[in-house]
Length: 330
Ligand SMILES: [Zn+2]
Image: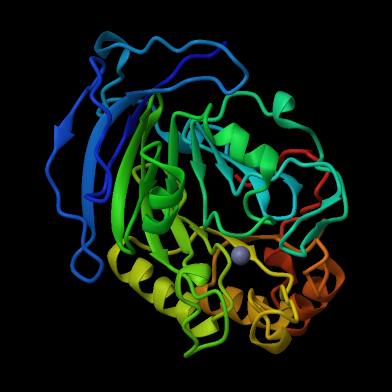
């Protein structure tokens, strides 16, 4: 198996497990409204497919002097629903794991299509970026099992409370740094609103987006379950101001709706609003997910393509089918 040493950052909401393999620990207050706070601590990487990763301090690769990550693979693999693997700077991130076969859930949600492949086919995963854990279409039963085998899981403070210390709860605009043999990827948690502007869904609506950045790392925005153009624009503005232009946006679209919540109001971006967000953020590439495989998505990829055509930005869209084929974003 391939082996990488990964640095995990911890926000103040979670204690880093004591480990003899800690590589570094530097201070930093996680705060929701001040400057981005970054904390860093070490943890070994492990293979979810069962290999061991006996990381040691000696195997750590210093950040400085490493080859530019720009020369490394930058690919996205869509597995179904929101579930995607993003490979950047030598790190393999898994977004919102869902790997169940079609089934109905107690929540009323229904998985309608199988994943492109199961958890035994995903290879090494260095970190899960979990936008939220409350909803089956973002974390299903097989996805929950998988979390236990992945060395780093980044999510919301609520997910940390519900899922345990294995999950780092990140407040908005706090950051963690994940070190790979190829470089360092900074992961910043960013706001997302799981419903219409002005509506507070409480715990059920707590969700986070993420931004990946770093030297040689294409700045990548991952929206999570966000329905608000305003919130996405605010994130984009701050990222442009503090980090730089957005290279790639992974947008959760599909206009998820359910009669049980807010009278069928869209709980994620409509196709039209996804196009507005893309136009405003102006990334080089847009990866649209969260339009297939679940019964609560009310708008499909065809409507999304049409909306992007209407805005004159269809050329930004990566052809993203949930078939498990890696698409090159470089
Ligand atoms: Zn959700």
